Amino acid sequence: MFLLAQLKLDPGWLSALASLLMGLAGVVLLWRGRTALQGTTLVLPWAWSLFAWSALCGSEIAIGLMHWWQASVADDQIRYLAAMTLFCPQLSQVGAKRPQWIAWQGVVAILLLVLWAPVIQVWAFNSIGHVAPGWIWGTFLAALVLAGFLNNFPTRFSPTALCLAIAQFNMTYTYLPMTTSEVTVTGSLLAMALGLIGIGSAIQGGLGCPENLRAEDRAWIDFRDSFGAFWAARVMLRVNDSAARYEWGLWLSWNGFHQVEIVGSHADFRDGVREALITCLRKLLGDFVDEAWLDARLPRANNQKKGLEDMEA
Image (cartoon, rainbow, N blue to C red; front, side, top):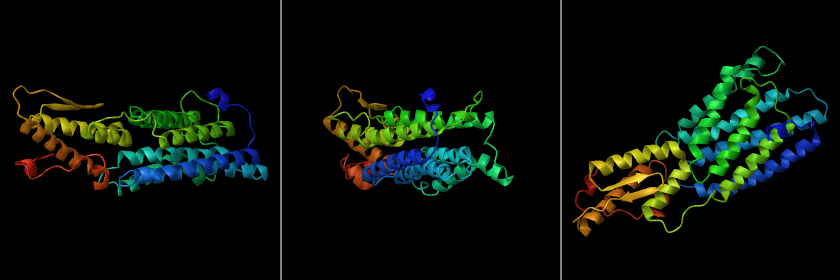
């Protein structure tokens, strides 16, 4: 694939047209997918995704038109700026928890400025040279690619995570240690094609979700797949801590809840455990989603039962 990215294709009106068509297709798909995120804190990562996609496609359109008009343009600087925006949706996803989810976007914006530093440094010295941040910076970019990939690959959106990771690597590998080749127009178009495939896969639901799940399993899997492994691990730890503390006789794994049969337990006890579990889930997931999202997946807990109103989730 990276050999394909090195095929010779000169930027011009044809590359600008291809970028425009893929860009419009991606915007349409992203706009269609926004409704699935309503009621969650993922609306801001979605906005960053739209920004990053527009920057990626828009940069190649600008480069193609500038070459067509035979104007001087620093291709690698424009492509570097666009490539760094691809990290913003994943960075925003990491902070998608109330109450700090809106303020976190300022952190994402600052991190983007930091990632743009090598180009800003070139501009500050009025240089038209190539962007050369060094191998330490390149290793940092590789770590960001790997972290974003590991956060979302264990979910049903693994095809999207894989496409994004390859696209990111394709746009940044020239800055890694032991590399000398530059990102070409073919490489940029390949990254856009991978991004378009990833967006389409996410809109279609990725690998799909198992059918006939219990309400608590459905809520857990939908949350896990939407918010990634980082937040899923945090919620799993909290649920299992509560289960052990209150002796519910169950535990939460990556694939759902597992119940331990308690010999001699009464039906009221089992009902009480389920009520407590639902209360716990609704409280923990309520930091990420609204009541409508929860009501669509979980019943409302019966808080009239003794002790539930005092339970610590």
